[in-house]
Length: 188
Image (cartoon, rainbow, N blue to C red; front, side, top):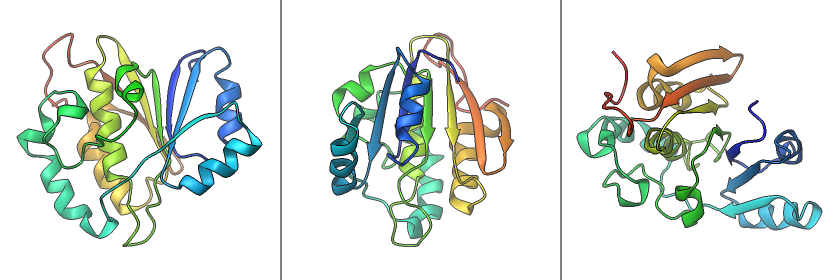
């Protein structure tokens, strides 16, 4: 892990204190779908910076969302808040869009049943935030890549050409800034 760094984590879990401690001196921010869970964790660990995220997708919509994700409104480089792509998470605190994240972990939202929100928007948004940084690159990790949705979305939207490694169910991508030089959405 790069430390200290700006570390964004989709998911607030029992391992959150460890992630924050490993990034000593850096900024670690957690995003979670469950307000009551955030409240529970904040009572135990008030030092953890966490925010609620509302998702408007369902796992059962994954195939149609993947097709949308390949269209020009989703592959065009733009601030996520201004994106016309349905996959873009636009309701996050402004600070989340303004920080240049060195490391992003996608380990939420819930994605193991048809009516769950799934990780489609989190994967897409992580990839676009990485592409929008002013320079350099962002390491993006996605957990549960053994599941069909995470497998397809990471390969298509984070791009197989940016994949560094897969270890078990965890996939690692290094995505360069697309602002400092003109690059295709995915490398050839």
